[in-house]
Amino acid sequence: MALDRPAATTPTAAPWWTSAVVYQVYPRSFADSDGDGVGDLAGLASRLEHLQRLGVDVIWLSPVYASPQADNGYDISDYQAIDPSFGTLEDFDALLAQVHARGMKLVMDLVVNHTSDEHPWFVESRSSTDNPKRDWYWWRPPRAGFEAGLPGAEPTNWGSFFSGPSWTLDETTGEYYLHLFDRKQPDLNWENPQVRQAVHAMMRWWLDRGVDGFRMDVINLISKDPDLPDGSTTGVGGLGDGFPHVATRPGVHDFLREMNREVFGGRVGEFLTVGEMPGVTWEQARLFTDPARGELDMVFQFEHVSLDHGPGGKFDPKPLDLRDLKASLGRWQTALAEVGWNSLYWNNHDQPRVVSRFGDDGEHWRNSATALATVLHLHRGTPYVYQGEELGMTNAPFAGVHEMRDVESLNHYRQAVAAGAHPESVLRGLRAMGRDNARTPVQWDATPHAGFTTGEPWLAVNPNHTWLNAEAQYDDPHSVFNHYRALIGLRHDLPVVALGDFRMLLPDHPHVYAYERTLDDTRLLVVANLGGTPQTAELDREWTAADIVLTNNPEQALLSPGRVDLRPWEALVLTRTT
Ligand code: ISL
Image (cartoon, rainbow, N blue to C red; front, side, top):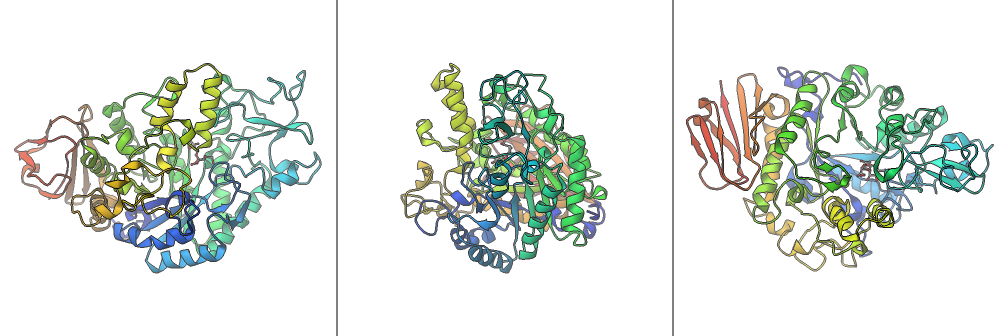
């Protein structure tokens, strides 16, 4: 896409999304209008006031397409229909019109690495080895010398992201199909031009309906090594690690350039495209987001949300060392300073709640939620707020696996316990890192199901909704909600926030996160204590007389020449001109 590169000195040339904030809606858990316990489009439409009040510019809507819901809509059986649990196409059109009328944009989730096994394409593909759609997916016979259906007969040794082998035998033809995720999510074969053309046509159909862009699910996995070599190292679960053979291969760039041409060609700059890319490095991200290459506007990278993964992977978490977080986010800021653009996020529907993960959801709940928000939002990049994050929603107190719903968690529990792990220790990992933490319903008010539904919610509301809810926060000037609102306002109002250069300060301080942003003669300082004990940070003396533009602490800031004393989880934003 030949977008103008955001040059720090010419703000008017910057694309619109450099000063925008995106809000992610996970529709199952946002608002339920019909009492069936599942959120829906009409429910979302009824809560747009909340988003407008918050001040966000764009809504990213997680999948609402027809789906058997094996992975909550990330398994799609019809890309051009709305799942009845969410409503109808008419509801969608009405929602889109309302979003636009309120001056916001709507970005769809695009899940095209795989479909549902109930998608008509796969139903045809599996029907016979000579079906015209056979080659739309990855089919392989059992390994020579092995009997189909027995361990070792899978065409490769790859483990799936959701436990177990990434191949499932289909009895109809006696061959295996590839699924990097659940067995109900067969991978499309992007090498086949018909697949790509079908996806492009579907995307154009949504753009013609008026949507404003796409968040592209695991888009760096669409190009596989056609030789399908075994993984040479062992991954989690004892199976082979196929990741190097499916992730961020050179073909992804070709596919994205082609998509860009075929789908967005001639309408440059109107849309937002963000590619979700597990394992992407900053060197690769620079290529994907270099405007001159015409691929994507930005990517979701995973480095900073993997820093607390222990030796056993994500369900074996270890404490975060703040220095690692600063080194990681700082590296990405530097890497994408001249070319490309960062996305900024703590949370989404796959991550545990940040206030529970990197903050303190007990004594310092409010200040840790607001300090973490401050630090993230004032980096250079486009911030993403995940529903409920703006309220400081926390992880859920799951009593046991019977209260969880996520296919990843349930598969992992089953496999780990079958392999001899102690159920309590598996549960500990799931409680800390499981995706259902992000998926408990949004807490609108203190009523029994938090104002989410009048029926039985599909996943229980967090009991803390009696005090942690939107209603309780709107009129409180110190609430988490109003702090997010202020941060979003700063991005809109101050060009230095959207476009200023970034410089990390105090990289070796174990508890203080500090950085400077500079645009022309304006300087912005963000300094935050991301811990529960008082801290001191040395600063340039010039900051002593600076203006405080935002703080999460109503008490007087403790600034003195050359230093600032920070209370637990205190965050300050200062500005001055040079
Ligand atoms: O949370 C993860 C598993 O540990 C991630 O690896 C996640 O699966 C990965 O980020 C891909 O996520 C996306 O694709 C998945 C879907 O389940 C996720 O919800 C989606 O965000 C398959 O479509």
